[in-house]
Image (cartoon, rainbow, N blue to C red; front, side, top):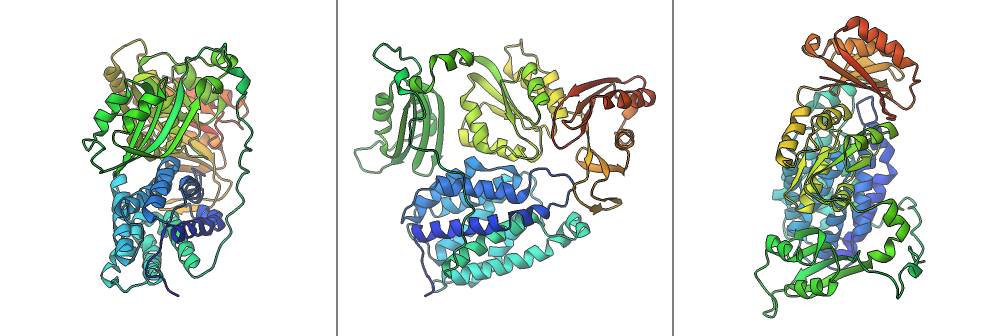
Length: 547
């Protein structure tokens, strides 16, 4: 029998079926990536984002309760631009239906509209012909046809049909798709999710791919490390979700800023995320009872977790990894490759996250990194255009006002940003401005082997060809890696005026090739200072930064 309303249990089953439908065709979505370099596949990013939401959500008959957990998990687990956009869609949907224990035609229509608007708002320069267009046109073309008597099945059927129409037109809206003969991968993945949700309502259950085994219930730490002779200095890691209440016994003057200010009296490493009338809190404190008493002035706890950090960290761990000293400025960078990690650590990065190209960093990884530093201000160097949105989303989730995302789109830009830093200065704002100036006018050349056939405008390549890119655009294709680099260097604006060339060698490139490339570069640009660094990156054989 068709459903005119669904509750949280129905919705949970639908979301899991949507995830399973996407998982089943994950590689198909990945293959729609038109670019011949694997730069964080869309299907995988979307699967990991939605999977984190499904795992994070709490089963409830109340749709609002279930969606809040789903949204929180997706926001934190978002990877890549497609994952961030997907998480923002469901965040908008969750905000719109927050007070709806049951979702009917009106709530579903409003949620789909609020969802796509939230997704658009998350992107600085929205591009039509992508997942955004499909989200928007899918509901805008049918919103007037939805009435109080519509069934959930009929609405989703119309929604999917309209999205399919828009999907077929994405090549006309985005020329790069047309030349490659494909549709937008993110849009296709989004449709697969909703097709899986609809199939669930019709009784077609798709099995989720087998997930890694959950850890056993044995203690994760040696409890004997804390006894009657122990000292207690590390405090408690305290996390909870507080439901604010309107009963007269509770305070009604809640303000996030004043709430944080009060929490600072009780501890540090504070993260506060406000979602409507719910407040998610993380704090390290020696006095959890005081935190509990303070929070209960506003409402009661939905969830609560308290861990003794003294037990978690034994004496050896504390000696091996001492707490970070307080700094005016802390730097978090995303890189790929052992050489890169060592280089950025040596440059003074406080946290170096391994990721960037093949496994895009999630918002949660950034949020975790924020709690590991003790600084007045934090700078993030994403070093990848597909990581910038996740970094910005993490900054918003943390609610800290002292986080700056410097939009470095390559490790070369990140390298020059760090080179401009003045770590001995206590003026954090000046240091940030120096680092921002470091990425300006930096040309990045990336050289590798094409992973698939590709054709766009006047550039075409076959799988296995040597290719070189200038700031993300393919410039040279051939059979000689060195020639593609030299040809691309020649395309750098004002190349004769450039003075510095830093070259990062990839993990699979023999060291002796450095000398060959150095001789060719020296002959072509005798006045340019050339430096080679063992980067150890996986995808690109060579990354060249020119300043």
